[in-house]
Image 1 (cartoon, each protein chain N blue to C red):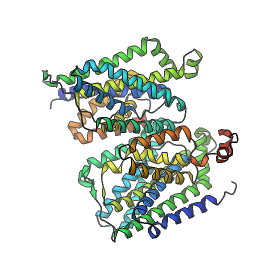
Image 2: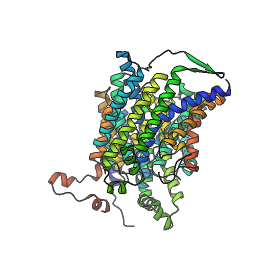
Image 3: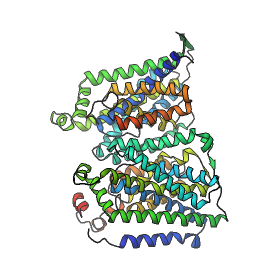
Image 4: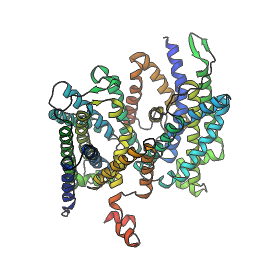
Length: 286
Length: 322
């Protein structure tokens, strides 16, 4: 396999990874909560997309906004009803709570959807350019992932609610004094994180098969990407995702795919020690 | 330090004796449950040293347990007698945790939590991809213990109870020594502890190693008991969260809390496995959620008098100080 091909594979994978990790990063950065539900949100998004597509035959690209809306509602509700009550407790408490919620969601998904791998199969053939062969559905997935990431970036930068989220992340007390309803912003942030996870799951289901067992894998990826890229917004997740995608792609060719995932984790552990704020993270947002 | 009450020790001795009587008085099924209880009691007690006393949100129990499974299994496969293999597993895991502790204990809070979970994932991935030695995803067969099945389960139970007793003594000694005092200082305020002259790094590593050797031994004994191990079961992410949940259910940072929590959780799980197989995981999740909201201090910290006589509860801060 040529160098360009490996790099292209890595970039496509990397944009999907960025999309997977962005919600996790947002929740960690703003709420200071490690959200163990994140992987299941992604799987749920993938399953909802698959079943909506299988029953209605509508293009998954049109289904995606509905899936995202459902996930937003779910995330907002969970945060408002449960996590907000203990949001300032130590990490042991919040992590355990989200893990408990994850066990429930995971169980519901295995009962409702079974654990059969599902994939939205759209045959668009493949594209050859500059000696690189790339299936078109992956390119569509990459485009969607980039679009979603850019959309979140714009929302955080320009909208009222986005500015409020950033303000709460920087200083919760000061934000409250400025009249921002912190609990509402927390719930919205968690909702947006779930929305991004659901959308990422939708995109993922168009490219790879999705099954409930993947929720732990997605969660692990989110850990690694956040530590590599650093917390503190969209850019960290994008850099971390691309870095992980490219590293895994090269590692897969050089030392075999079964070792590629280990490389990501080891890299994360090293970065945790030497540069815990991540490659582009800003110190103080930890 | 003031002389501490002997009651936890007496209660624990009675409880261990009661569990030890199960093979004599009850059937195989009860013995199997007793073994599970002993196993998780040992794991929860070990976690208590790093998670309860020191207040570090460690989620690496499954890594120590899994490495113990594999070291014990590999040693036995190469001809080492079972008892020696179990000790070797504990010693090896102790060494591993010393090295890993020196790395991850530099992290705090969320970063430590993530780092300790990553250790579980890394161990599992290494074991699955190192096929020539560990059998990879196919798992490993472990030589079975000699004897008739009831004798074997009784033996496993006694060994597990021995580990529980050792882990409990480690808790008691930690609780009543300089180490425990230092760890509690770190739990309250690590910077301040450092300032008054506690060598925080050494103390934390000591706590981490203590929290690792017993799970290593438990893993090795478990491997001999079931006769087959594989990476997914040995390095289980559910277990790594379940063990802290047990300790918190009883009361983290106390001596008997992890014991009570492990018993309660294991029995509940047994009931739900037997009756609601399909919904088992959701029910356990609901229990975890309920624990966080309704029992934040654990069963032992419940103010029974307030509940029974409907007196106004003392506030939480006062109870913690008392």
